[in-house]
Length: 328
Image (cartoon, rainbow, N blue to C red; front, side, top):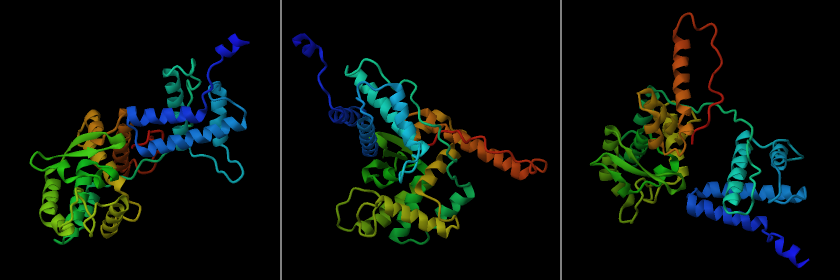
């Protein structure tokens, strides 16, 4: 009896394993706060599934995990079916969690081998034409401090392909106008250096010299882009700026800050930029994420062909890019 008790593995509650896993992701992998929050929620939901089916996290099978995803994909009562993108993330969370447990010697066999969520069925993101970009960038008129700010932030987002958080988090010391470069802080606190084009440099220079000082006044503020009170611009504030000028340019209500990032990438690729360089400028960890823009470029080329060729207009085929992975 004593030998049997000595051979039994120590009990490891799922809650403690989850905390260890999240600490590893934050401290060693440097994942973003949003990802950590999502994974915490996924594992909490997984714990509820295990409890309701009287299963142990350390002894579950591949079939048990597949059942977990299958149940989420099926509507139940007032709970709707989970979206394909959500199921993909939960499958990725479980794969990462069990790989971590195996590395730590907690389990011997990984039950997540070949575990996949359903294929995503996503549409290609909206991309502006060059003419539409010109209209948007020309929308902020006048020489007021706010007009100079709006013109600078629109120019830099299109010139550098910044995410919203990167634009609002851009500090004054991150911009090197002499070298024509800026430092962007991306997902997971990762930094990258991105070139700034000549037009964007001029807009930023005018804003920093003549616009920002009027907005900041005597306030100590490190953020490059500030609101009318001189405080750092928020995500919502940036969204409002872009929506306002998109309406003024006649581009409709559906444009978002991310539209400029998609447009930056698509225009660079169409101009001959290679995928590896584009990946670095966008801050993508995986080249597969960047490859969506090859589909965008091909789709635009196909659209131009079927809109222009006199014998092509009658039978326009369906898009061939529905299975493309989504950009981040």
